[in-house]
Image 1 (tube, helix red, strand yellow):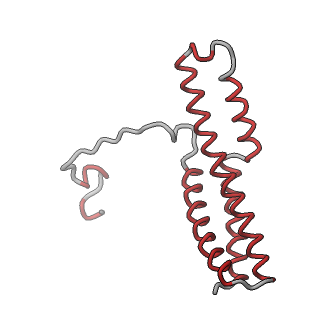
Image 2 (tube, helix red, strand yellow; image 1 turned 90 degrees about the vertical axis):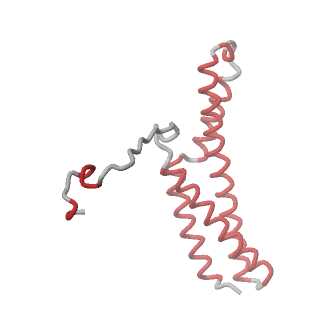
Image 3 (cartoon, one colour; image 1 turned 30 degrees about the vertical axis):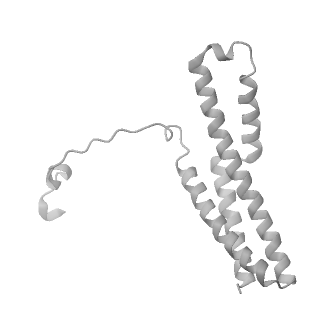
Length: 150
């Protein structure tokens, strides 16, 4: 049996986290509008003749759609869990409480994934990076400090 009041506070905290994520990644309405605009571009005559542009637009559609579906799903799940929690405060049902607890944990993991996506949603974050490691490099050469300073 879970503490429903504690779970309610947890869900309210997750709602605040969601609003922060949505503010950073993009509001659902804005993402939906952007998706419609991008899909409208694919219907223009000659769009498919320019493969470079069409690939760019298709990739952008994929990215926006991914963000939109993730946010929409999380928002709907959060809303359902808040309603379920409020219902369980009034009506005790042990089976529903177990389901609520399991789904709350699942949503928390989903929000963590969205927060990571939020941090990696910058202009250049979708690009690849090349990192070169040089084996055998001494620490004092890298930092410019003596070995005692490290």
